Image (cartoon, rainbow, N blue to C red):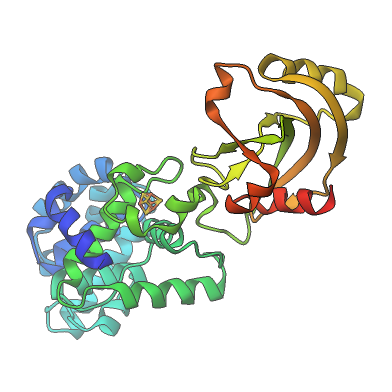
Length: 345
Ligand code: SF4
């Protein structure tokens, strides 16, 4: 299912890149090494110049290292060029000048890791090895809401196994390129274009509004503090509810009218808070204020309190809310934080 959706999307939206017109492992190898630390836009002109001067393994193997480095000038990370050069000589000496078509042999070349070996093996030789890079970690972690850190030993193993399970064994070349393109063009790091995504209907983080929390990293987990003030507002036996629709935590769940503050604004500033509330809500009586313990999510800490009050929401703000009886609340999906409040109020 996933692979078919991806392949259909790729057949229409694929990026046209010079190394995609070929199944020559040498050219694919050169392009992958260039792209290891270089953006595509910058890498394309280098690729053309390099391939023009060194069109095959043999021409690279017999070249002088200084000249190879010259052709690399400006790209940085020169060990890449030295490794290319040394590996070209290995191919000539140990593999009779034929680019190896076995995954382990490809990976034995200097400067070739799992990702590059999988890219060459799948694209040039149609071998079913899944590529796993930053783009793939991002897509898979969002798709399945995987909380295992991608920079942990367990995470690397889990993602690798999952990617390997998902790869289309009939067309691993197209599947891998489709996954790379999806990560690079649609499932973008900070603002994924979910509306254009062929996997949207299957994506758990899209449905839960949690894409910003993925992928999880062990070393850089920064928990963001958020400050919520909920208004448990009664009007004639009914309470107000609002459905969270934005791409945020708890998207699609129901909650009480909420004011989110940029910083804590607790007891000592309560009059300021009341003024803020007065702009949107008409509060007749405050019955109780309940401070909740910190609610800890994987990437956020919610500091909150609830104001139990009597009042109404005048239009036009009222259009955002529905009113339900307190007994009917059980029919609405609500965040755990609100459940905890209802239990303790
Ligand atoms: Fe990424 Fe959005 Fe697609 Fe999910 S729906 S895989 S978050 S682009």
